[in-house]
Image 1 (cartoon, rainbow, N blue to C red):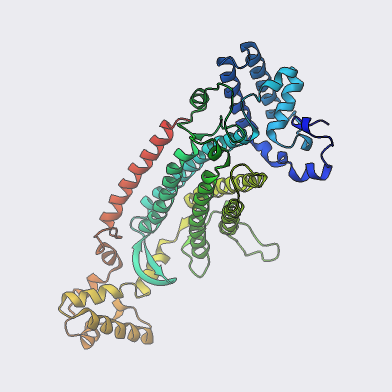
Image 2: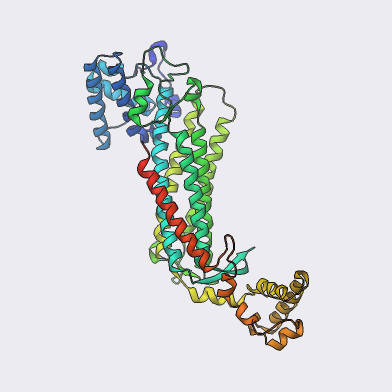
Length: 468
């Protein structure tokens, strides 16, 4: 079968070469983007008089027919035609005759595939920002439910200081907010149009790139044709952002796994997001967060893979760049699934506030406040630290908490202690004492909740106004 580029060749391509080099098994995913770009390109060709208006109309109608056939599953792509671009062009020629061969006028597969990937990543960027916003909304709602739920905060996975569960959840709202900001910032680089660069040096035809960019919703054009066809920075940036989103999802998943264990007992995940054991009938396994945690390395691996592919490539296009797609496609699907599952999983989890509070009260998480209390009574902090350390040791030996100690036991350790120490050591008061800066005090948490709702509204407004 003669290739669309086969005029210079005297032999058919080796079948193994065809199978090894073909990208159609995976880049067929780009058929919507490829046809959308071709429709804009051919309209511009007709408007500029590069092809006749009737030819442009005929090609456009043929492309729309092919798009409907692909959507309906009536098209079988061929490895012999290598990629989605050549497959569609071959289908077009079969559909409308030799006129279909005029579609490729003034462009190359190099700028065509770059355009397709820009269109694909642009749409997926918006999808992910929407999904992140939806997850943030769930976390904010759950935080509002648990403003007064106290649990131990942890450092080194050891109980540290009492915090409000709302404060803990809002930390993830901020993480995912930064993720959305990174994607929003990268959008302007994704939304740059490469079409018109040709294979490497542009085209001799009097095309109007601005007209195509306007129709496709691009804000900017590449200034340099060589950069346009070889730039994959936006994909590296996208995979970097995707990797960090997965890391944040993995950290949240890890806590859900720990918290849902009998050892913690802080939350119970809905049955719909867990599985059982084929042998042990009592088991309820947190498979969803475990898989999210496991798939994080997969997305990170795609980022490393693309960076490795690009590190030694000379300008401009090289076949190595074909390796950019599968990792991006897989990362998108992995991330979309993880975000879509995490939101309802968090929304449906039951919180054991009593267990959280009990652990906060029993784990000496108010020890720092006792030291601060002694400082307010006039004791230097380093001495106060030592006094409290000895009191904690006493409690450990006697199986007590700090609030179980009598006033006499306190005064034995330090005569400065008064009756008001017990009020100071209540976990709510310990949390509310942290009212400065970004602390866990109730009033501060309520302020942050309002702020996050405003930020989410701003993101939704951005999504509604962005042009694509």
